[in-house]
Amino acid sequence: MKKTLLALCCAVVSFSTLAKTELTVYTAIENDRLADYKNAFEKQNPEVEINWVRDSTGVITAKLLAEKEAPKADAVFGVGASSLLLLEKDNLLAPYKPQGYDLLSSKMRDNNNPPHWVGMDAWATGLCINKFVMKKHNLPYPKTWQDLTNPIYKGLIATANPASSGSGFMNLTAWIQMWGEEKAWAYQDALNKNIKMYTHSGTKPCSMAAQGEVAIGISSSSFAHNLIKRRAPIEIILPEGGIGWEMEAAAIVKGTPHLKAAEKLMDWVSSDDVAKLGVKFSGITARESFMTPEGKISYQAMINNDLSWAANNRATLIQQWRDRYELN
Image (cartoon, rainbow, N blue to C red; front, side, top):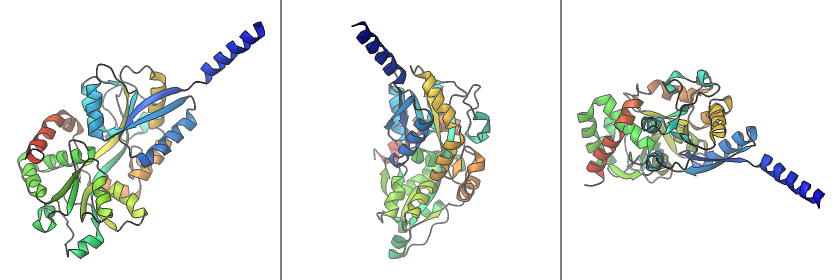
């Protein structure tokens, strides 16, 4: 009997030793990329298991703010940095400086000491152009942002909704930063007349262009490159005058009961492994030495983006956008 009890106790101890820490991680990364991140992280950290909860950046931001008093997530991963700045302002992120942090691009680091979030990679605006649809309608290729307001494109453009998509919000804030509020809203009024659909996610406009549902998808060059590799009939155009951009970033949710495991995730975010995975998506990583030639072209066209301003004005700008284009 004593031997049986001893064996049972050893089994219980052994099970508890082997039990994994489960991390609930909110992410805006597309489903087809999540398995690569999960497998790579868990291979290096077999004692931790990631449970993804995926949605768009805007939805994740609203969810975390709503859960402020009783957080359900341990960390966020691949969420727009402007949203993390908003969460940081509400004191929802735990400070932590991960290993390898000093190797990251200065553009993709939090200025706080210690930092509250970690940049992963950036994505920048690009126009996904369907060659066949353009030819079918005998359309000229746009060169500037203003070209997209030409009535010949009516019903042939798709773009992301700023209220739900980080890509949509980055375009909204980029236009305001480039031209000022008055000219930017006048531009969007004109552009709105040509929009076939405002999509929930930033990838969808490019997918619609690839499938021939629209001629032009205002999306990201990152999304386009992946579709082109699959032989989608699209081309990428970077409008003259500058393009908006955002970055995928990660952070620890304040109050997590799994702090050590979440810190391991942040250490990994700053590693070579994540830079190698991120460059496959955007070509513009937080580790500049990993950038692709295409990524460098977009990097050079990116505006001087004030992410703090975007975060502080997020609610006001989204409400203004909704009042103009959702409620009318």
